[in-house]
Image 1: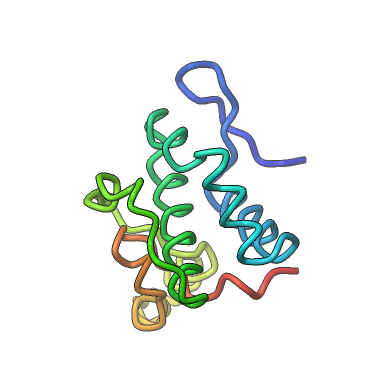
Image 2 (image 1 turned 90 degrees about the vertical axis):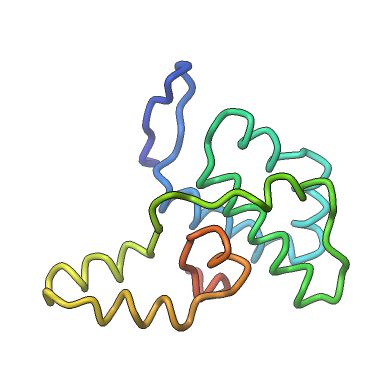
Length: 134
């Protein structure tokens, strides 16, 4: 069962790690271009942003910008206002957070920061591999 949290307005919201995983699976299953078209057609980035679901919105925007860059597609300017946003606290992959806690060392977090995809880092989200999904 998906890890769901109840949002302020009674909607159910996936835990962020679940959201990230589902997004990466959608990219894998749909392919880069079809995923990008789907996100733009549904305006998911704006819908999530307007709900104040900033991590999810910024993750999708980072994904869109990253996929645009690696596929030589110009950035969609529709979200330029959101691109000025940054999360106040960094989000790291849960595996790196657990490793850092167990080892009492920031080495795992530092490694993720160094390897992070720039489009994600811009929003204070540290993501280094969107393709390695099971």
